[in-house]
Image (cartoon, rainbow, N blue to C red; front, side, top):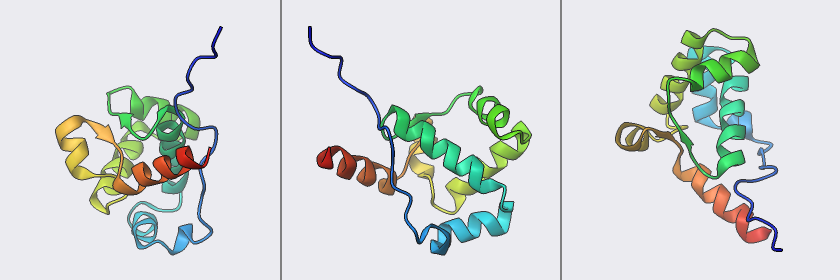
Length: 114
């Protein structure tokens, strides 16, 4: 019997220049350092399932539960992440998903290396 096809990744690279990225710096400036665990957890959820994460009303609760931050703050971080370009505003508005060109490119690169 064949093994089921795996969806998503077991790991993803975090660049050593992560904190030099202007988008990350803006996120920290506008939302504070505690925005980083929220953003990182969103990335983990995205890559665990592929290259995007469907937005629903339960997502802020799930992120809040893990990080210990209020759901309202999680929503603010997600909105700010879209505003600074960490997530695509167009994809969020049109398809209710969190993703970006960079996330998709990284996903394809990792899949090719596997």
